[in-house]
Length: 406
Length: 157
Image 1 (cartoon, rainbow over the protein chains, first blue to last red):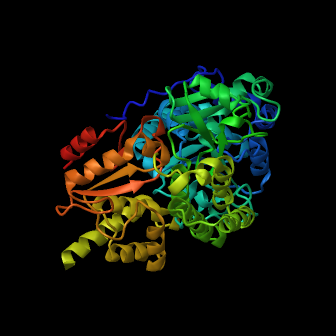
Image 2: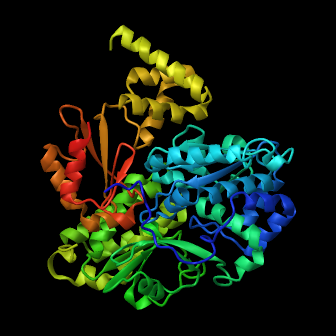
Image 3: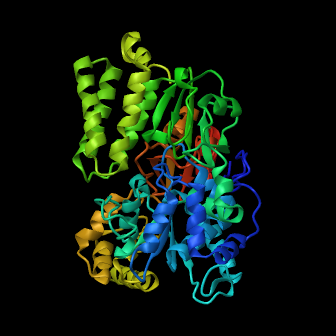
């Protein structure tokens, strides 16, 4: 089956998928002016939608305040987290929102150049996106003197990744843009001061940027009314796995795991992996927990596993992923992930000791503390949460630790 | 490599440098174009890219070795990448994998003798709601079953 028409996503919610006239966001931004935009974004309490949840207004303010005539706005479309595909839907069906968000960002922080870093796997979107950019240039929404306003110049170029998960980390992404290996940098200095080519750079997720035009049109307070106190607005969830209706859902923050499962028609659910491979695995007993920055934070990946699935098989798949995708720059991540994978293989072969498992759990703590970037800091999450929440299944099953079925 | 082949490659790389520029940041786009055109970035190509960008050849190699999609060794004309991440895995990746391996007579990680197809696994393609999924070159195919997957591979040249 061809995936040229990717329409089988289910949408709900009225925040991000509501109608917006093309160009309206940029027009509104020009009316508001820089300070008011920053104010509205601050009022909305919008946090970065990639998963880390850094306040967008702070990022923009710092970039705007940096002293440098050349600045950049980078859109992070290196969506590599297992189970995430919301950016695919946004870029396929709502490119206008994303590009407008970038233009508004450029206007606010004083950047003239925007770069969309598209992951190599999404190369099939490139032609469509370039076409859309050409159309926006023709409509004077991009290029020199946008909408006839002298001095408001902003243009967007698209750069492709080449299949490296770690390039979704903002400093690794910048390294990759500069033509280097995609290895994360030490921080500080942060990209808001020293980013692409040493210039102040704001790196935002696709979804964050797509939210901006809506916030400007309706006001920050309108946005902050949705969701919870600390996690305002809505979130796109990429739901996949054992459920009747997989797809992208727009739901308010603060929804419980159970509510979400009911919505997507998931039955006999044993576990939900929230936040992708680097997220945590929630067992049935905790389905009343809330999905929000203050409880279970996520970049949007929701993977549902039913009672037939073997947790050790799932965990092994995640650890293989990290072993492959670790950039190898820092030792805790490069070696640590390998040791964890070996530990899982020991459990599978029934050749483990509990003393060694305990040592591995300590190793997890070390990795979380001492890894250089988010990859190594979060890769032990799955290991810890699955071993903790499913220890009955993993250690009490006779023979091969429940690794038989899938 | 014959002399005239080398000259043609040099010319091509100089053309790419005109298109993308000679900054270090042009390295990745140049390598991506080369990979697409030649299904490999040979030692000679690496040296020439290093020369036009005025960097050491080892820098070029280090970048190639980092990115999964860039290769120093020749691959097939078509690269088939089957997603092996958990959701596609649970949706029936293994059946598709085995059917493809039987059909082509090679294992994943190998290239057919006629250099038509290279089989590879890849991590999440962002098609988890429609798995199992694979990309052939840059085109995505979703909701695969063993038969359709083999049919797709039969039709590519």
